[in-house]
Length: 256
Ligand SMILES: Nc1ncnc2c1ncn2[C@@H]1O[C@H](COP(=O)(O)OP(=O)(O)OP(=O)(O)O)[C@@H](O)[C@H]1O
Ligand SMILES: [Mg+2]
Image (tube, rainbow, N blue to C red):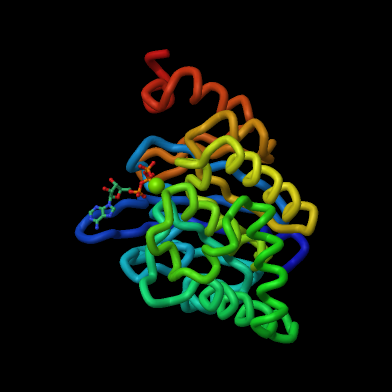
């Protein structure tokens, strides 16, 4: 990566899902260590962008480019993207029956550690760190021994995403509505974790509908996605304007 190149660069990205073009042309830049908030009406394509960058097979890139840390992101497999330091949380984290949560997270963490030139953690060392992180995130320790998200409540699933984020310490994390369904302590835990990781240099793209969280995070930039393209770019003032007037105003500025 050159000194002027952003950590993540997306250029005119077009994505098809099923028979539909969902992302028309998305361009954005996330500098190393920055926090970008992505807003947009339901169905505007926010999750599609995250899952495409993560390498989900259902999302077919029909045009454009994405570079991450100087590499052609779209040429990498989903595993290679994670190993390169990209973390994407799910809006609706899936269950993985039969796979224990602690083994799942340790396997992911050791793959990332290997690519960073760090030694793998054995079950004992991993559990020590995982227990500590789970306690900080208000996730009962018993959840580590259960299958991934199996029978977890909505908020517990979100906290489990945060646990993975806390342990993986990625270079860039895209958090898709991590605050939805979380109680007030959960939202505080999100803010604390994001702040702590930012101090270590992690960059963030945060998808959220809630001004309260956005204000607490203090974004460097706020983007509004509309029907598969970035329609507005601004700062906190844009998030406040959307919270006040809604997306209809934003979609029809000439009538304001
Ligand atoms: N398999 C599919 N076939 C057709 N359309 C799809 C498919 N999957 C997603 N879409 C459509 O793509 C559009 C964008 O969906 P996406 O989940 O990215 O929106 P979003 O901005 O994350 O919305 P929300 O705020 O509700 O989470 C939606 O209109 C959705 O119905
Ligand atoms: Mg979504």
